Amino acid sequence: MAAAGAGRLRRAASTLLLRSPRLPARELSAPARLYHKKVVDHYENPRNVGSLDKTSKNVGTGLVGAPACGDVMKLQIQVDEKGKIVDARFKTFGCGSAIASSSLATEWVKGKTVEEALTIKNTDIAKELCLPPVKLHCSMLAEDAIKAALADYKLKQEPKKGETEKK
Image (cartoon, rainbow, N blue to C red; front, side, top):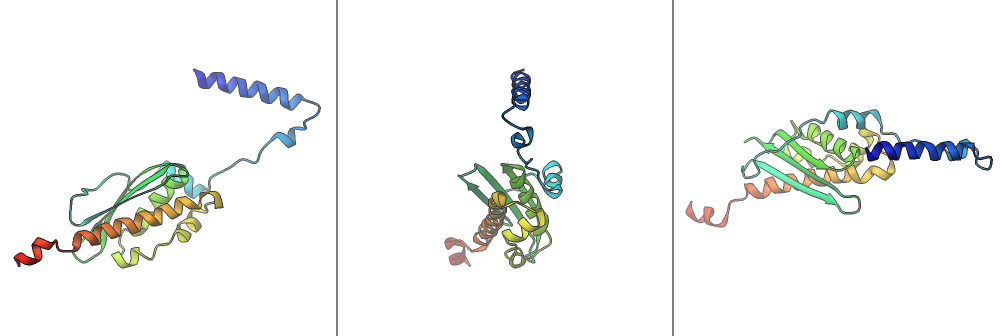
């Protein structure tokens, strides 16, 4: 209800401003900020949304955030016994570019080895999604989430202090 009232108010204000003799209409119209179709596709049809069992030894979890914009990204990978990433999931709280970056990151890590996944860079993600400069932090978060998930997985592979003494 309040949204409808706000919409009417905006239209009325726009009409008044557009009819003002001192302000030509072309000066009032701001350039539309549009997302690239690849971002929209990943936002509207995100791939690999969800969670994996974080307690599992073969699952690595990366949780990263950007306090400046409020984006928070959780990315998880599942690795088989040969070191190949067989599944990836994400949950992201943030803008369309953050969600798209997470979605793309999960697609890219699947099928790669742990070492190959480390080579994914934010610049590659940004280029693929055609992110504008003001949204580059989203691709940086995705790269950080991949690295954090891989680091968590590697940490789980190290034997605990008590395990080495038992063998």
